[in-house]
Length: 136
Image 1 (cartoon, helix red, strand yellow):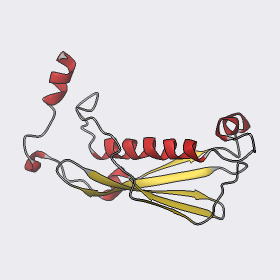
Image 2: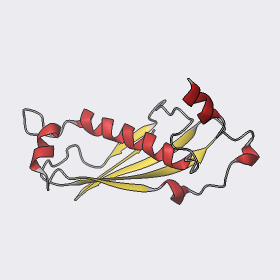
Image 3: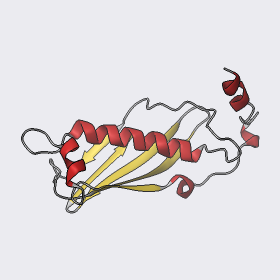
Image 4: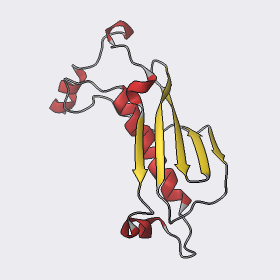
């Protein structure tokens, strides 16, 4: 509880106390090496040897939260005073219905809009010949 009180001291008292942020400040790319690391691929496969899409959604959710933490990072604090959760996913566009378990997947994303108590993150997922986009 004491640590939480200490973290509260890092919060800005008003919007004017916040540093300016740009979309590129929260941009990140992450590679899921399914093709190059067979031992990791095993964790993403169903018994039919297809990708477990639920596992991909978990990764996208975690990436969305990481992007939000990057956007709200306070460099003088060891930990964030904020708790960030995914409230909803607006849309998922799929260009193809299945993913190849033999190819790496690249995730990327950034904060695209910020309000006083919420923010929007846009993420994309790329695999050779496949494109997906999500807006949590």
